Amino acid sequence: METVSENRAFGGVQGVYRHASKATNCDMTFGLFLPEEARDGPVPLLWYLSGLTCTHENAMTKAGAQAWCAEQGIAIVFPDTSPRGEGVADDDAYDLGQGAGFYVNATQDPWAPHFRMWDYIADDLPAVLAENFQLDMDRQAITGHSMGGHGALTLAMNLPDRFKSVSAFAPISNPTASDWGRKQLLAYLGDNEADWAKHDATLMMRDKGFDGPILIDTGTSDQFIDLLKPEALSHAIAERRQQATVRMQPGYDHSYFFVSTFMEDHVSFHAEALYGA
Amino acid sequence: METVSENRAFGGVQGVYRHASKATNCDMTFGLFLPEEARDGPVPLLWYLSGLTCTHENAMTKAGAQAWCAEQGIAIVFPDTSPRGEGVADDDAYDLGQGAGFYVNATQDPWAPHFRMWDYIADDLPAVLAENFQLDMDRQAITGHSMGGHGALTLAMNLPDRFKSVSAFAPISNPTASDWGRKQLLAYLGDNEADWAKHDATLMMRDKGFDGPILIDTGTSDQFIDLLKPEALSHAIAERRQQATVRMQPGYDHSYFFVSTFMEDHVSFHAEALYGA
Image (cartoon, rainbow over all chains, first blue to last red; front, top):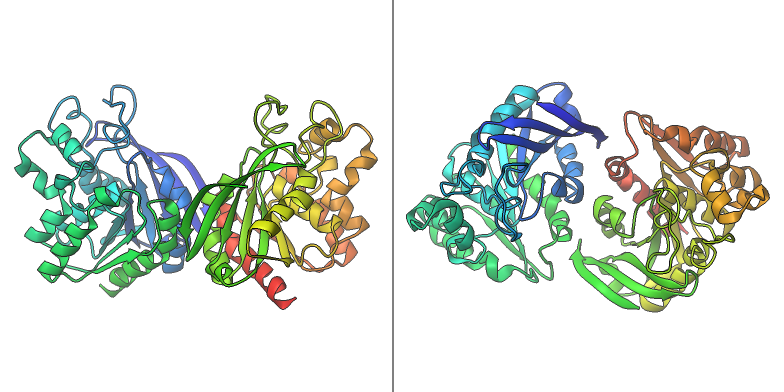
């Protein structure tokens, strides 16, 4: 693992690191904020999965999360959204290929050799983090925005006992029924829709649910709300009697102005789960 | 004035607007965050002047100021750092021309026709803001980063009674004695160094000072600290017995990670001056 940069921030360190990933078979870059407390011993870890077109950098610079993570003594990691670099397949569309990994393991060409973001987030990056930083891997939580909200919810429900809590900002909530989902799941996973189900938060909620608290915020003026389908996931949550807070935030859109507005609430929510556990 | 965008944020609105400026003789773009309280009547206004290479957008998306301004019920405006567009002179260097207006009125060619950022910030933009928004122009404060810290300090000292308080993040503090200053002041104002004095915070501090509180933060690991010369301004402040808090922040650099870390302190500092007045 190589250090790209380290900046002092909120009493801790905002770092950017690069490593050779076995999962994606290419170099991957991630951001990690460590609060001051990490000097003295392991701290809990919050994952932030980003949305379409983002790299590790967008949320790291625009979501305002470090202030609240510093206050709570929690680390936060900002992974990239796809493999990148020479020899990695891509597509002209913003919503397929690089920047649009959708947190799945692709089985179809030309994506299969590198687009294994599920394994990257579930196995590969956790191992790198545990080895190199003062992190308490028994206390992890996960959040994300848009495509990253989809990733956070599906990872949390598919990996029981991994995350104490899960939250999401404007998540893609029912991708098997949306143009933000069907196109990508077909391209990455092929046409057997049974293989798609574990990557749909609404279907996972119907099937398994989550053993812990959930917080979801979506703006009522989100310009992509018809693609996000919050109504499908809200219905499944209520039907399951799943412990959750689902908020429709009046007038907010899909931007980082929305994300940063509610970041304090999300970090506090996760802190309660991480420190209460 | 034309609305470029408006996003709901922290209970208020983060807008971006464009207008034809008489001062710079071209279209200018600025960001303005209005807190919820502006719906009911005029709110105090904090100016944030940005540094070299920035537009109106950098601080608006990376400084995390809106959270604290919302908490305090204060508006914050993010002006651009220079004129821009077709027919506006420029230079290949990052530190001259577009993105590097230095908050002066240029008298030298090719800069004189458009590079009048002093008049833009002192007269033109205030008139546009007063006309179009619910702002209490009797309660203004000013801050800025790097070149913008220089602008904030020199405007505040040159316009007595305009600003209740002034602060700066890593300001260019003594430009008449620095490579971040001499080059630009010569290019914009010509070789009569007497004309440069009002644009040097250290010289202004020696000459006039500021009738109100000052807060200045600089990181001890700032990679540009030799160009900033905080020691010159600190000396002048102490010599004058000027009311001020000057902090050297251990380990912090010149980035927005530094700015965002101390933004809460700066907004609180200004709020006290704005509401106490």
